[in-house]
Amino acid sequence: MGLRRKARESALQMLFAADVMSGPADRPRHEVRADELVRDYWTQLGEELDEPAREFATRLVTGTLAHLPEIDERIKSRAEHWRISRMAVVDRNVLRLAVYEFLYEPTPRTVAINEALEVARRFSTYEATQFINGILDAVKRDLDAERPQTETDAEAEDDDARDAEARAGGHDAPGDTSDGSDQSDGGDGGGDAEEGDAGRIASVT
Image (cartoon, rainbow, N blue to C red; front, side):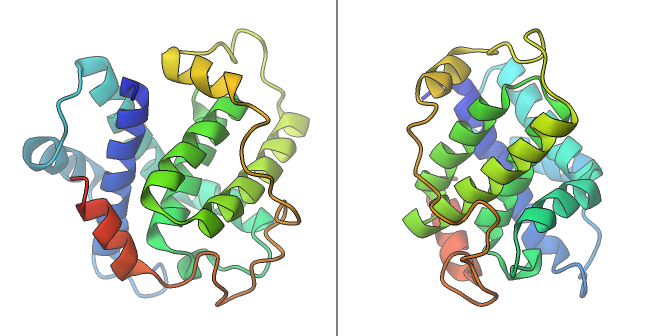
């Protein structure tokens, strides 16, 4: 597994912790400080990653939290019939990380999708992976129309990126999930699954 993949998994674990600690947006428990979250993670739970990978993971977390309203709005625009608060904690944070990469990192968007799906396959379910794929494909199309990536912007940044690019087109077909419309509120694709999420996240920390 490449270091960038491990960095993304570490970022997911941090966002999961932030999500669980802060609670739902309509009933927040307390504010999570990104700097404290990152410091505690690397001190107590972080894997042995080299400095560039740690910096990448930290940037993903702090950037996602800083731009959360914008990121969630992008997700909501393509997750019809699904409130973000009803998605499984893992699933919504995999989506958030990928959309942050779409918006603020030079990662090719196809690579960001494939990397998100690889992470989702490890931490979530097959059905949720299809759901994530459909939403990310739709958000990517929106952004490609609004702000196409240049060749310079879209250079693959490491071996993870090149591997994912080679897999492009081979990820799970979303069927009719390009707008999330087959996932109704309270359905099976990403519903309230915090206990299962916590078990999968905890099993690799």
